Image (cartoon, rainbow, N blue to C red):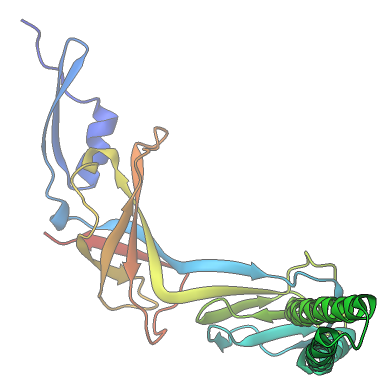
Length: 286
C-alpha cells in the first residue's frame, strides 16, 4: 500500500500565504486532489486596465492638417480626431458629384430614341402604301436600334459616374481619422504639419468603459471559478472604494513557470470615475 506524501514545503508555504487550505495525495504516478479552497475569503492582486487601446493612423499619405483633440480629451464614437490636407480630394468629390447629378446624357438619348421610334411608325405607314422603299425603312429601323444602344450606354455612364463619386468620397474619407469608440486620448503622436506615410501613428486612444481587470490566480483554483461570477474590486489607496465586477474570461492555458492562470473581469466605468493603470485587489463572491 502506497503512503501519501505531503506537498513540498515551498509550495505549501506559498498556498498558506494565500490563505488556501489544500491537500494533494500522490498514489504512484497518479494524483488524487482533495481541496478545500475558500476562494471568497481571499483577495488576489489585480490591475485595472482600459478595455482596449488602439493606435490610430490614416490610410493615406499626406501632411497632417489638423488634430482636434489632445492628450486626456474624452472622445465619442465617430468624432473627427484628425485629418490630412485634402484640398485635391475635396475638388475631385465636387467634380464627381456634379457629373453624378447630371442626367442630360440619359434624357438626350431617351428623347432621340422616342423621336426615332415615332419616325419609324410614320414611315411604316408610308411603306404600307408603297410610298417609300424597303431600304429607306430598314435605315430608319437601324436608327432606332442605334438610339436604343445610345440610351443604354448613357445609363451605364450614369452608373459609372455614381461609382466614381463613391470612389472619390472614399478617398476623401481615408484622409480623416474618426474615433472608433467612446473613450479618451492617451497620447498624441503626430503634430500638425508633419507628414504621415499612411502607417504613421497619429493618436493612441483607449476605451474606458468598461475597464478590464486582470488577475493572476494560483493553479489550485483552476476550475473553481466560472464565467459570470461576480467579484468585489478594491483599487489601491490612491483611488479607494469598492466596486463590483464580473468574470468575463478564464485562461485555459496555465503558466507552468509560476503555477498561475489569468482571469479577466469587466468593471463598469460609465462616468469614467475610475482611472486605468491602477493596481487593485479582487475578492470573488460566492
